[in-house]
Image (cartoon, rainbow, N blue to C red; front, side, top):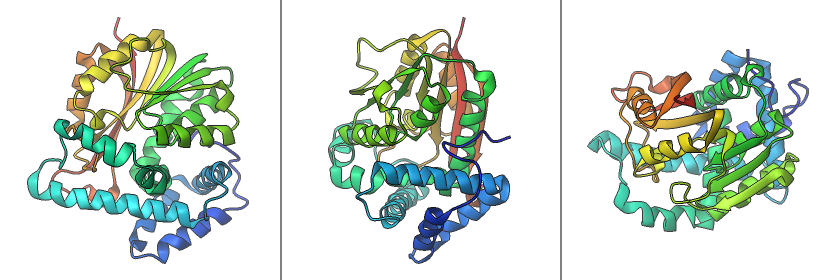
Length: 316
């Protein structure tokens, strides 16, 4: 059963969501909105309330932006970027960027306000409520990592906090926890700070800019999230090794990886979910509950893009 969303789970007013969808329906990318029908068919009215609450949270964080145009246009632009990269991947079987491009990616994407504030962060945020496989992964995160059986936590971290959606859910779940939120991008940290302030959690958060692989003094925590990161770094094995070192005894982490999923800033190509699980095990992590999901429209592809999520603990 799906865990309750960030706000009310009662369907009473989905005005913002309806306006967001109308904006998509009126664009050249109107087919993107069909994913919302797929999610609603699977999760029912709870999804509508969830998506509405999450859009309202984002609007509280960014009231000065034009609504819903900012969110809808950001989602469209994010998809346009992904589709461009998918064409390259289908022809070559490889990502367009590699380890040697990290400096360029940082300059052109992560340090660019035009990209990050213009469409990347809000577009990625919206994927969790329009892409069926992303919503399923969000549901899995809530059930497997934040669920009632997950225990309590007082020290939480997210590496690659991005838009802050997952941290907002975690800090709602653990109201006494202190949080350390890391990202390479100052724009991501600003975005997450505003979202978490709108959710009432920012005072418990320490925002840190930097590379977690290079940081010498990472806090040891009870719970750690590292989502949408492993495919962005040349050596994901090093990130996983640091995850193990950062977990307190009995600590747990939620990790995701994109498989056969081209994007302008994806540099490490995972070709199967087994490859992800094996890398985690080699880093000294025990893989617990896990999920591999593909967008339903892509299930028949010879190399379908997957999102892999897993809950891990440090191996004894």
